[in-house]
Image (cartoon, rainbow, N blue to C red; front, top):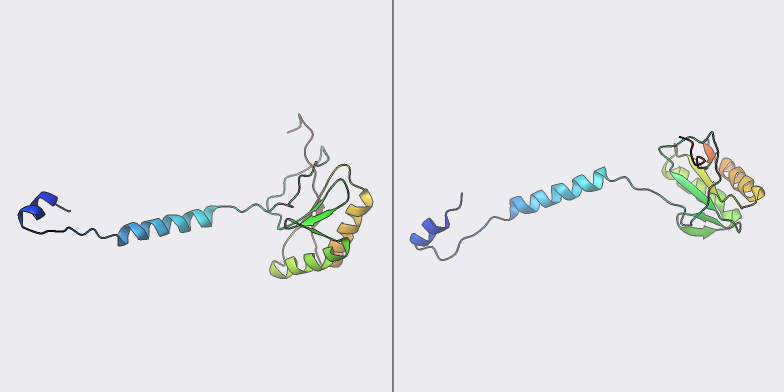
Length: 140
């Protein structure tokens, strides 16, 4: 332990504190929070999901594709063309071959666009393609 009064009596002018343990502890806490934080990926747009009584929660969705009410397609917070969906999904599957694709389509979007996006995902090699829905109010 550090005894300041004893050090002053002995005639020492400066007292040094070792900062290495403090810095080590800060880095350990930083690593702990980075490892335990779950990163949520979003489509980049606000989408009003349709309700479905049979909707189930999916824990790990690695690839999210959003379809807005005006039939615009978003992936990784940027708008993409329908022709670019396949290439983007192929790139995402190259990073994570076991990745699941979830299409988050607005309830007022056209069904044809959602089907085209789903078809492009399957052509890209995605084995697990799902449509997102929310549970109706009052259903648990």
